[in-house]
Image 1 (tube, rainbow, N blue to C red):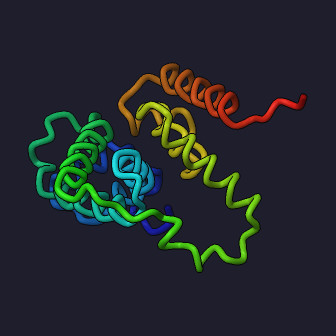
Image 2 (image 1 turned 90 degrees about the vertical axis):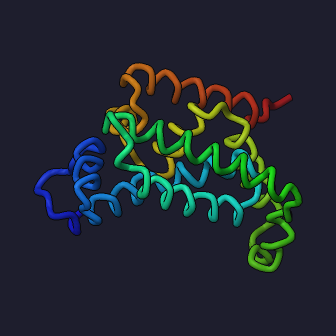
Length: 182
């Protein structure tokens, strides 16, 4: 966070208020904080990496344009993710034909072992099957490295709720993915 001009890490609400005052650096930090979970949210609807990336980008553009309509800066995370889901559903309705990521990335993953690729696909598929609220906290925690307190701020939920959602998601993923020896 060295590039941000504040001495301490600003809260999401502080960034939203600054961005509403046309501070582009603040909005850029919001994009950095939310880019993975927004893309993950879009992917959960579309199941297409490139389409999800397009929807994520479109969602941030829409959010930037509509930021002035957000009344409570603390609700930015849920507001942005709802906007993303809506955009992903619109995209799916407009172009229901998708290309498998396997077809697109086959040459890029030629050096990866089949066992690793299978485990990766299983994990990504399982994360995609999680309920939205659980998938969000898994992405925030394991991909972005956010603490429970930070996730609570980003999602607008109490810390206890976030930790419970994360623990339920982990239990669910273990149940789906861990092979019990016979």
